[in-house]
Length: 349
Image (cartoon, helix red, strand yellow):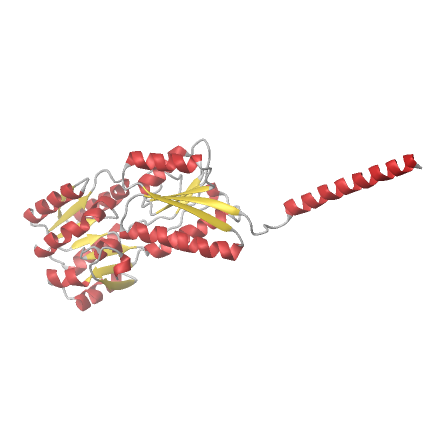
């Protein structure tokens, strides 16, 4: 009898063990119970209105997506302030903290993250990389080819050139103001130069790598008596805009730029993407990769309609242009024309 009890006990124990295994297997196959947490690490290149808009909207949208998908996105944020050494340390910290995905805001950060993840293959989603193919972070927009993809604020340089001549058909000399070390400026400046030279327009190029150098470059452009100045989505010039816009306006020189944040900081006109929406779409991409398992290497880079012209109405008046007249002249080249006033950040609007 005792032997039978021992056998029965063994059988019961075995059945219970098998049941536990079966339950464990079912639990592994079951959908997330809502406790899943994804660590997302964002590095911003520099503190400016456009890039800050992107970061704020990534964070806000991830919070929404977390609730919608019953998961948690734990977001770490840092800003390297255009310091390459600080950037490298921030990225190293993200890797040491075993982040699930890194977000590189602007071209230099995206390139640094690409290099830092060649072996560990941590997924990287970039934001506001103007020419991701030319700078080598992806093989193509349609098929990135590695562990990195993202959103691009590609600039339609021809469209901005058309705005210059729509405002003033008699333009003879155009200044190109940029930081030669900014990869995001290379293609746009080359395109602008080619466009202008093909029309027989004199091109004057001035560059700077910091605020002081940019101020000197602007003084030289004023002395050169240029009729207009073009700057692509260049972070160095963006940082300096608040310190140069009055000089250009006083000289009657309109500054045409590659982002609405320039116009916010005093430039005559910013033309390009909606950076708030770019941040939202970047967050959507992060969710697709982490929650829904999309293959990073096959997730196409997202580009946007570049049709919004943002005019600083205060600078517009200072130069002597009429805003309503410009809206009519710009209409064939824009999807919409918006107005803005000078401030240091979008929160002040």
